[in-house]
Image (cartoon, rainbow, N blue to C red):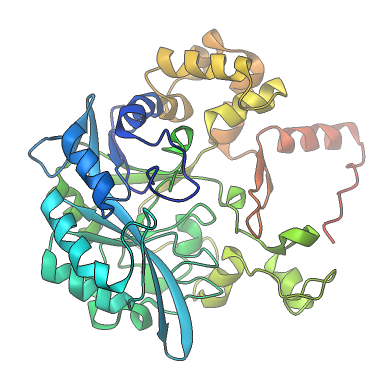
Length: 419
């Protein structure tokens, strides 16, 4: 089935710790391989980057820009640092623009609050509500999307610098929020535990810093949408047009569990409580992860769904599945060769992960790769949660191995102690 798939949060080479390959010329190639129809530019407030984009992107007339038959949407992520209600807050917000002029006008307005050239993701000493006020002075068409809303350090609900409610953060401007981004360490099911979020569309984006990571999370729509149509669909939470989101298994995200990276401590929220959120090795505070924050703020039980929810599908990147099947690294030539063959044979990676029949996949790969894809589609995976900046692991064969041991009456191998 042909969808309209959008990944509207990535970064450019003008952001710190970002690949020099994050250019429209290279990104358009990867977008086709991945199956992304609409891709963010990232970093549009950076004046030098914006001038380059104006030269190489062609306006399509619907609020998007084009390069090599791939659509781009003008975007930025801003880092806000401000004091509110007695605490220092750090929040990241994604903004999207239908034209270059609005981005330039906002850059000039915001430049008095911080440098727009020091980093592609600029930092501003600015209250979140004040940002929205300024944005709306520029245009009603700019989309406002709080980014990765549960990340501990820089997000709306972050354990270290966020808020306990969205209304406290945005005050009278809360209705100007277009959507909320779940981030890699949470999925919609976790967010459904907060009834206060029911009114918002939940979007998922890659937040990629390198081309091969684009599309690892994305938004799937029934058909092509112009910029204004996309904004309206998100604001109205239109289930007929917004079909589902593509998600990491949230355990693979870097902040799903609580923990302390230096001491290799990883705790489920209940274990953290028992230890008073203190690392048992070094006696320093644990980094409280996404799952703990969701549990703390939740007013629903896990598994309950709001009436107007948008579905989602948990996926594992195809290179990860191939690498696990071959017991090789993701960057090895054999993994790269098989990945490229499959995505070109079946149009793109997302198509392989979601829709291509098992018989067709088997013809072009092998039984182990097919089994990995099947296990992923059915959710039969072993999940080792990430914590404190350490990515988790989704083992697409782990649950299968444990089932075989149980069938043979074998004892499970001892688990490696995390503390």
